[in-house]
Structure formats: C-alpha cells, structure tokens
Image 1 (cartoon, rainbow, N blue to C red):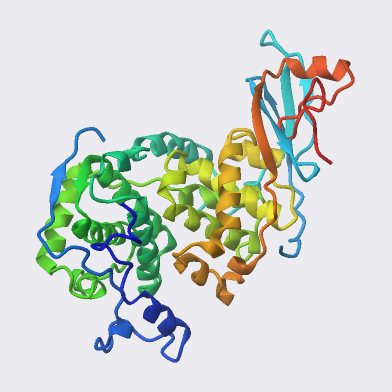
Image 2: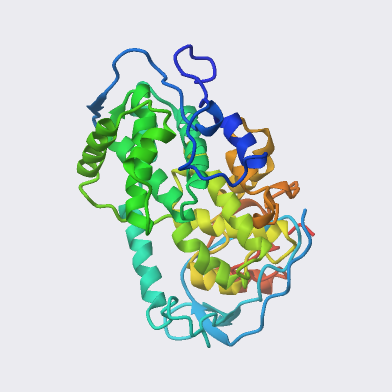
Length: 421
C-alpha cells in the first residue's frame, strides 16, 4: 500500500515547521524549553484510529580536493580470483599489478599500498590492534544483518512508510544533537526487529522512537530521557507504551545490542582515502551513507562495509579524485568489482536525491558545517558501468595477445573487454 495514497497513512506532521524552525528565527533554541505550539513539535501523525498491535511473523561537481599524502609503500600479493569492471571516466584508478609466479601453483598479483597507520600516535586508533578490530567487525556485520526481504512478510507497512520513519529520525537526531552513529544503530535495530515481528502501521513510529531510545542508551554519554521521546512524538504514545515496547524489542533482539553499520567502516576507509577530518570527501561520504539509510528496498541486500566503500568511491569520483586505489582495496578488503553494483546504486541515489519526497538528509547536509555537500552537482555517470568475473590467470594471456593486463583496479582491454577513455 502506497502511503501517499492511503487514507489511513499520512506524512509526518510538523516536519515542515521543524525545518522552518531550524533555519529561521528560532534556530538553536533549546528543545527542553517552551513546548507549546506545533512549531516545536516533530512527530509522525497517528496513522490509524483503531487499535493496532504486534504479532509474531513466520520467517523473517565540486572542486578537486588535496592530493593524497605520501606514505610508506607496502607490497602485497593477490592470488585469488579477480573480477573485471569497466571504467567510464578513463582515470587511472590504481597502480598496475605485477605478475608474481611464487609458491602457490599459479600466478599471483602484487600491488603497492600506503601504510596509513605508520606514525599514528592517536591512542583511540590503537594501531597495534586495528587490523584485528576491523577483521572482527567484518564477521559481526553478517551476524547483525536484518533479513533482506523482510518487508514482503509485513502485511500493514511497506518501504515507503519505513522511509518516512527514517526521515523523521534524522530530524530527531539533529534536534537532540545525537552522535551520528546513533542514527545508524537505531535504523539497524528497526530492521532487525521488523525482520522478526509483524508490525501494524499504528505502531511503526513507536518501534522507531523506541529503537532511537535504545540506540541512545548504547551510544550516547547523556541519552535523552524517556519523557523527551514522549514529547517528540507529540504525545502520540505514553511513557508506559515506550517502556513496554523497549522490553519487547530487547527480547526480540535477544538483548544482543551490538551494531555494525556502514558508519563503523567509514572512518577507516576515509583514512585509506587520505581524507582530512574536515574534508569535503568526509562530509560527502556521510551524506551518501545517510541517504542509503532511507532506501531499505535498495540497500538491505548489501553488507554495511560494501555500502561504506561504495559511498567513499562515489565521493572521491564526484570530487575528481581517483575513485579506487590499491590502498583502499587493501584496507577495505574489497575490489572495485566487489562494490560495483552498490556503487551504481549509490550514484543513482545521489543523482536523484533532490527529487525525493523526504528531504531531511539533504537539508541537514546543506548547512555550512557540512560544507554544503548536498548542493554539489552529481556526476552524470558512475565510475563503473558493468562488472564481470575473470580469473586472474587470464591476465598474462591477454597481455601476450596485445591487451592490457588486468590490474585489479581497472579493466582488461582485450578479448572483447573495453576501457572507455
């Protein structure tokens, strides 16, 4: 059921007023102050007048950025099967790989990458264990993934309603100045819960606000009180309803509140891309990742690390930087072909963001503190147009036949495979 045509489902009330408040005379006002008037309220309207509940479900174009910093070069061999992708911009996406016939029974590829942790003394980075940490996160991201097609078994809600809910949660996170990762965690809780429980539309906002409450407790130093979430829903739900739903969500998730999201990998990948702390690449990457949160139908099929890598790739491509490098491949453990499909989807989302009905993310990233990245004009084409599997053993043969040897970051231009210039 399309929420835009349903007589029982309406867009969130108060969002336009909230946006006007944030950009108008009351900008910066304390949300704990005066609470009268609809302009202070951000809430989803009550979508049904009758009783609704929960039942268990069966199954379930900017200026170029600064050039990368030079660093220690490391050589690594790669002998596993590779994939081929076609480039559309003709850029050299990485240094060529060298054939290495070492012990292993077959040809292997070697490539150079920067040691991004050399000389890093930040204790929060824990360079002694950072590789093991991200290796562990890659195993956990599979554990915490929701079911890709859970919405098929939902009888009273659909992806459009989920989009409206996430759009509202973006504004809630901004209103209470929550950590950026809190939003990702909350959306993850929502998807995991909906993977197991069938929810009636009148309770969807209750699930969303409860997920934000739990995510705040998990991530924030000073999470908003329960009464704040009662207020932010315009008293649609009571304190007792939120606490009861909190208990149910915890049980359904089996009190396993860990979360591995695209945000978990973004900082590492941005470091591999040599993006600065206040770099336009960093803000654009986060903007793209938040856009993907709203489109569950398109992005639930991807692992969070793939979404993060694809967002970095599109951000680099949009700002005239090499979109995929040996350093990025090494630290993401993903080839350009591994993320090719997601890159095309992220570009589509970026290109069509201005036409969407839900604009909270675009308005958020149009502000000066985010370097107005949502106002950037997207490139007309993504850096990748197709992907195919090719065994790495084919590369030397193609080279002998006058083609270009596959380098792991570009495309073979021989035997019917072309590179666009």
